[in-house]
Length: 327
Figure 1 (tube, rainbow, N blue to C red):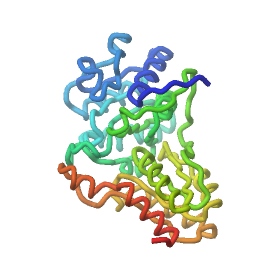
Figure 2 (figure 1 turned 90 degrees about the horizontal axis):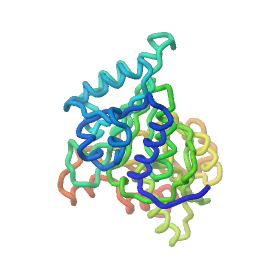
Figure 3 (figure 1 turned 135 degrees about the vertical axis):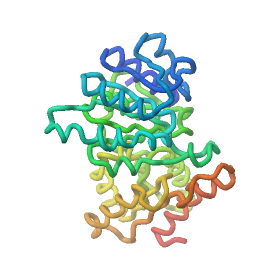
């Protein structure tokens, strides 16, 4: 495949343009989309290219998601932009009690092909109401799929798969990764939901992660390499469903596991992964699974305090050494 280097922002806009060209039932609805092409420029050029299919809404997430669910029921494929992941809170009934359950409550006769898209995560000193990682709320809700890409190529391939899926998909993109650049194929491609990716091969420890923490883990792996430790980095990309087969194959090789995410440690997805590893791969472990996550406090505004609360590269290095008993 022919590749070029573009950002996550450009990869998303390109994918949406291709899918809207392919399928006229796809439209985008959200707040303040047409004047500024989305808060991170992620919808650049789409308003002019597809008149009437990039829709500005009132400032009401309840309205947004409700309109999206209703239009999906009638055969459309909406992408609902929630501006910030923190604003999911005002639309939880529409997401958790309507979008997630309608297919089941109607005996499979109804489908809800909706993508609910939002930037998440910290690192911008945006304070407690604009910096959260809320993925586990939706992982815990049956009927929803959850996607969290880190690389531009993954953004493009996964948003295409999400838009073509007949189930509701919650799609997170980390705020600090919109400018992240990487190779993206020019040719048409899809990435199936539920398939992880090995971002770095290694034989000593498996580090399981996703979203922005993928890059932190890769940096930590380079530091560990200087101490003779070769870490394998798995970027899950999709959290529900997620690629446990990939995790299992890696642990059967390394015999050690570390799980890293930006969300709060308590109740985070790392606990689910660690529990399943313990249940199904116990005989392959040479040490207990260790989790790295944010401290269980609201994300501070102060850059110094925010850095203290959120996981950093040094925390990942220390966690890996703890697993390997090399503290």
